[in-house]
Length: 199
Ligand code: G3H
Image (cartoon, rainbow, N blue to C red; front, side, top):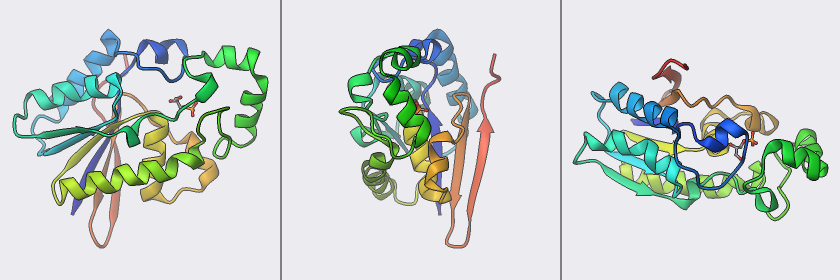
């Protein structure tokens, strides 16, 4: 039996402003989300926590680990957010104004469109699968948490849910709820669990 909790990092200033990429820390609200997550999960058995190498992912995992001295944490670059290339650090509104071809390309086919010198959702598949394989190998049969990012979690979910590829970039990945995925040889159960009111 595999039990996987798929969490998105808490809010950052970039999220508030609509800025993509970068390595911003959590806001006060994001830190409160991370605390609420740890509180919600305090009685759950969790042996492994996997993050990306980004600060926001690590900061979200920190309270979770504070109460679990025996748990392992590992940061995988395979779980880093989609690389926006020339658009890294830009506001969506700046991209619309200054690089309208990028917005148009994404609107036309968000799954396949790669940012200039960056990645597409399609390109993420391979590295995300590599990260997931490593995580599942290390965790074995024990429950694990992955603290990922919006695009990464969409791709991770799609690996289990077998979504149509064009739908993958639009899967709902909130910052105050996680996906609980439990896998047995006979069935897969998906549950979206709120751990904090969105205030
Ligand atoms: O760039 C990071 C975003 O979280 C990905 O979201 O593909 O919907 O722009 P998006």
